[in-house]
Image (tube, rainbow, N blue to C red; front, side, top):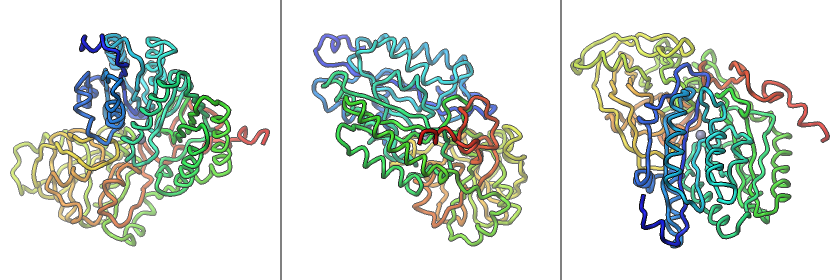
Length: 506
Ligand SMILES: [Zn+2]
């Protein structure tokens, strides 16, 4: 801590975040070691990691560091790849670290918080609501707190009550994270200049938008976001956010929500929310998805223009799935699809290939090892190509805004049909084509590329693919929400039940 700066008159603005998307249907929990392997950054390390990134913290810094009267106080940023429920032990350690670092950073005149909004721990289903409430207790009610959230957040009332304003990313794939960081930092400046001016209203909708329909570049989302941008232009409206929701967490707040932040005038925020509410009430059925299954896939695959992007919705690593589902790998091998690329997580296989010579023929069982929900291991016969370190970097704006990736030691095999199977020793999100390029694989040489995701991979893959098919595979991120065993979600809720109360009084 810089003690000199505490004596200056500059306003001290903290930056703080615990960022996780927790899939409660995955058997593998998220541990403290997972955060250590992801990002567990304190102080100045937060600045060096994100200042130049297409990430919300980069945008926050861009705005705050331009202000002569402010001092940025980076406190803590903890993040790891979406995965299972956070263990009690990890949650306790994170909360202890949060409190230690926050108390050491006091006094603060304002705070930027950077949650994802879909974190769940074993003991605390609304983990974001919990830690944000703790932070508010430390700062008291007078210090403005403004946050960014991922639209795959499950917004709780506790989260809303703990902060003065939230801004969600407005794109999926998330390419505007830096812009949203700037917007949120702008709201904090507004609150510092005009005390008590931020008036946030939120509304929880009786629906969960299907993951398949969450691409903001196409309808129905495009029309919804166009409407929200128009509303943001209204008098006294400072910010409008659509929370798409994260269907893979069995929590009371699972589902879609709306947020409007107004300049003081609560009634303007309420009116704006109602316009969006009426729109969703009239159009909610459009948000349920197509669900093309494996049984329908082959003719569509054959007819599609190549290169074709196949999206494995049931094994959406960015939604917390294991990354070792074999349904699409088996489909490609059984149907002798040529020149395909598929990546699976299987550290056992990578270890078993240590020391094997390039060009060696082999037969190895890959994937299907995390649980029984993602297919059985599949026998892959072919040639061992090489081992790579698995570290790669991305400089373009891509979903997630990260610049450095590490998929662990990675083995690359080539089947007799010319399909390349990449096997990683860490779970990896398919958000960057550098994953292939920096492993000496040229994406344009493939006819079919499998990405374990739904919308996020589009930013990286669509520049080299001429078509795409989202496949409704089984798994913990299955697009068919009705197949998932929810206990805690709100009811009634579309698409599970008819949202009848939405229509009462209308
Ligand atoms: Zn997201």
